[in-house]
Length: 423
Image (cartoon, rainbow, N blue to C red; front, side, top):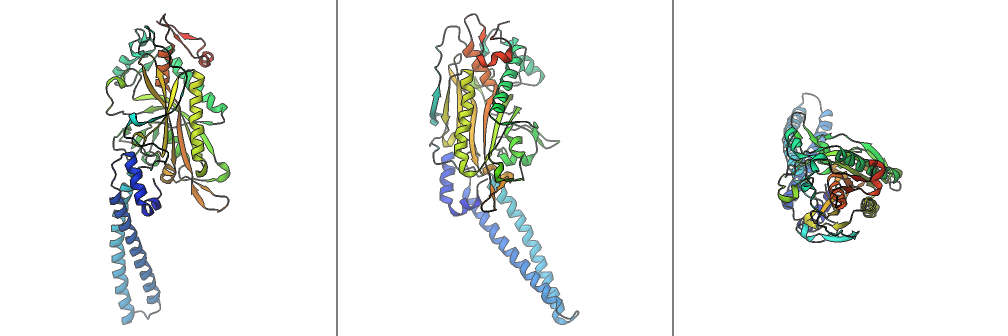
């Protein structure tokens, strides 16, 4: 969540940030509720002070005296007024919290204007786009695809968007996970195994809830949510904690299955592995001091790029415009790989800075060594990387005239061979 001081002291700047993100949000209603809430807090505190003073004065009076009985009447009246005010305050707090949680994070000044993905800015590109040969086709048109990916049986067992990875397909997916985790360990990023389900407080802390589009799977009976990314449990690992400044920056990575309803997805974007409801991903989370967070974002982007470079996959880095950014981000880069069979770019990573938006919700702070005060950390996260579309790019870009798929050299030690043969 945003620092309330920004909303109160710079409402026009907040309105401009919300406008830039093209998110429907009634800031005026939130500010009015906040004003009413703060006035009522002052009123309650004043009544309690008056009650305390009356109690002190009553203790000095002779019991049973007219003055004593009069004070009892005053105390009862004050008590009744305080109870009524407390009820009203509780109701206002609930309304304020709901409205406050629906205010998006404000974009950084370097974020470009724009409403949709067409307005994102290409920040960088790497690698040569391979020439499309006659044999280059989309992965979902491989006539031998079901020997490594079984969509039909996945639909039978669970539903659409839950494929089985079979044989070399399962091995390739596992090889990618192992490669990404090994690279993270070499970079000094500590690996963690994470829970695949989180409670509501955890989902609230990272901004997945309240979710107007309801993209999370909800286990109603246990009130748990299947994670859409390891970012959620990783970030909440330090929820409600105060770190020493010497512990920062802190880097962690986690492999997990990810679950997303992907409501509203349709057409060619959902064919094959382009968009599924369950997929594997390695995620990196950073907790850093505020003054370093934008440098940390650039280094996170460069790290994720290095993985694509080692895999030899041509890619581009996009600086996301305000209207195509996430709800919680202040600045976001997306990395997209080229899939020659489909002749299109596929997103494989998002690298984002949240500043203190998540840490305020999660109450993750550090103790400033100079001032001794507790300050909110800045959090960042980045995919390093998501498996399905990297898998797709390897299949389509590595496809040979004999229908085999040549594998990136860095994966040969993991796969035990340099290509996948059609079966």
